[in-house]
Length: 258
Image (cartoon, rainbow, N blue to C red):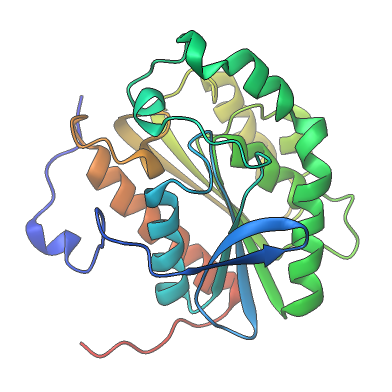
C-alpha cells in the first residue's frame, strides 16, 4: 500500500535536497545546529541514528524555525560519533564497519538522558516557551522530557515520530501536550505500543494528537528516501503536522505574505 501522489503545489516551499542555513554553536555542553532567532520560543529537535549532521534533520530545523517562529536547536547527542548515512538509509545495520552493537551501547538511554535533560533545562532558563520534537532515538527522549516527574515542566509540548526504545512506563507518565506521528509499518513502535499510547494518553488529561500514516515505514519522517513510495509525501505531512502542533502550544507563527 502506498500513499497517493501529492500534487506539485503541495511541495511548494518545501526545501528538501537544499542547503541548511543555520549556524553551529553550543547548547549546554553539546555542539548544536541552530536555526532561527526567536527570543521567546525554542524547539529542541532530537535526531535519530543518522545524527545531528544529517542534512534532512537540519532542513527540518530550518522549516520549524521559519514556519513556527522559533529558535530550533539540534544538539549532538552521540558524542561526536557519526555513522555513514547511506549505509543506515539502505539498511546495512549488520555491516561490521558500523559497529551498531557498540554504538547502541555507547548511546543507551541511561547514558544520554542526563545530557538531554541538561539541554532542555538550558532552553527553559532562556526561553518563555520550549517544545521538543524527536524521531526514533529522539522519540523515547521527548517522552522523558514531557514526563510528570519534571516540576515545573521542562517542555511545553512534544512531538514524537516512530519512537525507538519507548516503554509503556514512558507513555503512562507523559504530562504535557503530546503529538504522535505513527507510520503503518514499524517493528519497534509496535501495534501493542501504538494501542497503549492511544488508549492511555486519552486518560491522562493532556491534549493529544495521534496521526496515522498508511503505507510508510519507520524512519519515514526524516530519512527522505525517494525510492520508497509515499515517503516524501509522509515527510511533508509530518513536517506540517509538527509545525501546527508547535504553533498551538508555543505561540503564533509569523505572518507570511501570500
